Image (cartoon, rainbow, N blue to C red; front, top):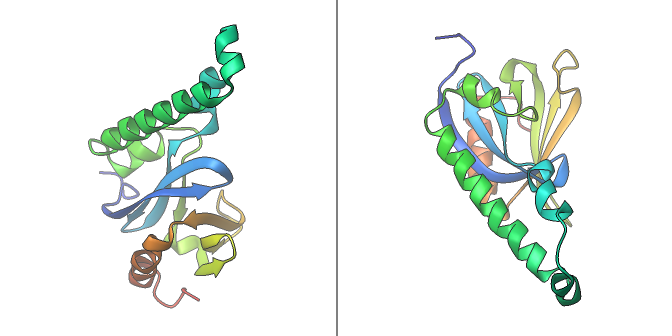
Length: 159
């Protein structure tokens, strides 16, 4: 086993990162955080770009929106199912938009409650591929669990 192929401690599902329509599952491992794409905007290109009959255009975007929602749920479910049979390294390499943050590169981590929800922010050493700040939007219900995880894996770095 590769030394960077660490054990997964816990997974926090369905966080928003980078853009509002990009969904990640955060895999907290023994040595790093892996942000694994479960839904990327490019996954839905075909749904939004395919030609539709005149009736669908008259009805409006409702049909297309329902198709996109159903496809989104299917893609997320399939990717999460695939995660179950993969190592953390395999998950990291499964999508071009997946990335890692080694805990050694984290300068500080914080959870902020704001007007638009709860954010998880990491200040990361510039030597890492993810430079400066890395930010995710959490669901309110995930806040205490993520705070507990941060205190467990990053003692002294949580502000």
